[in-house]
Image (cartoon, rainbow, N blue to C red; front, top):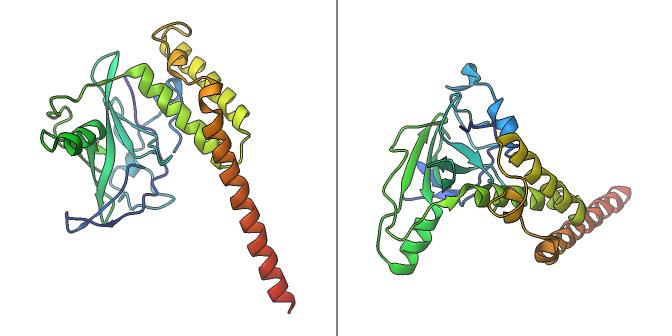
Length: 241
């Protein structure tokens, strides 16, 4: 059983065909370990709070909810994960939200891709209001859309957290080691096999497979810091003049 954790919801968007809504790309902040997720308590005073997209707008859901928020490829915790059984899940990306931020629409990432490829088929959608799913939780998917193994979803989640750590300044190898430890911790807390086929660790990428990507993210961080220093230096010179 999974629970939703408070998340930093800071999704930028543009006007969409929903009229009063703004669209957003799938965006995923850190989804903690399964052990931590199970301990999250429901904050009743937050239920009616508008989920206005902003740095301090948490998404809150009732306890025992059969879904939780996860990291998207944009490193924001705005994707929705819905477990189907102990071994498989469905992933839905943030598609749009109302101007108030209280209503959020999700759609299945795989259905979306398949629909674009084959130009036909269903695209599964889910609607959430105030952190609660109000539509069908298990909508019809594209006939070619298959569920994702839970261990793969968890490994992807952890790997994306590693990327965000690097973007925020962590050494790439240290971020990878941190992710590996997280995979072991989650498996232990959830009672899953820690090693071997079918484990979260087996689905987590080896260092050789991600070192180039992680290195590129590190280079981006360094460039950003240098640009910031240059701007600050220019501002200081301007002030001195």
